Image 1 (cartoon, rainbow, N blue to C red):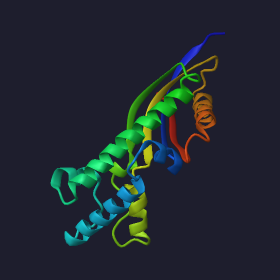
Image 2: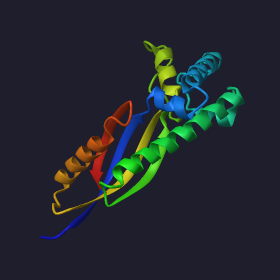
Image 3: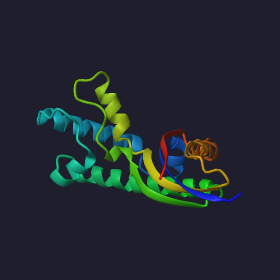
Image 4: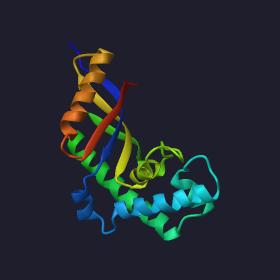
Length: 178
């Protein structure tokens, strides 16, 4: 019987609770998200765009108040740091190693909504509120088993078990042996 190292690529999304955010951040991400959505929606209408751009578009091209962009960036930095620390603290005892490949507040991605869709503005507010983080990490399992499917299922189970109740929302979007 031998031990096997198995590297697992894990993708997940987490949302911090309002209570946790309020304890660590003086500015409200909800107010920032609402104002971002309003200004971006106005920009899209004025320029007749058929889509809502990611925040980086406005950082490079203007069109949104600089102070608002700075607030969103600062809140995102604090929130991703909190998420990284929580995940590291909870998963370090479970896996032989953890390596974060990326952490990104979903507010900085292209929204999955188009102008004119039902509830577009509300969905835009939810998207641009910097309280949700997408994480890609590589976790190394040390196990007796070497079956790829079993390793992926075990990784999913361990991540869910050790992170449940630590975030307002937790969604494991993918687990794959690498």
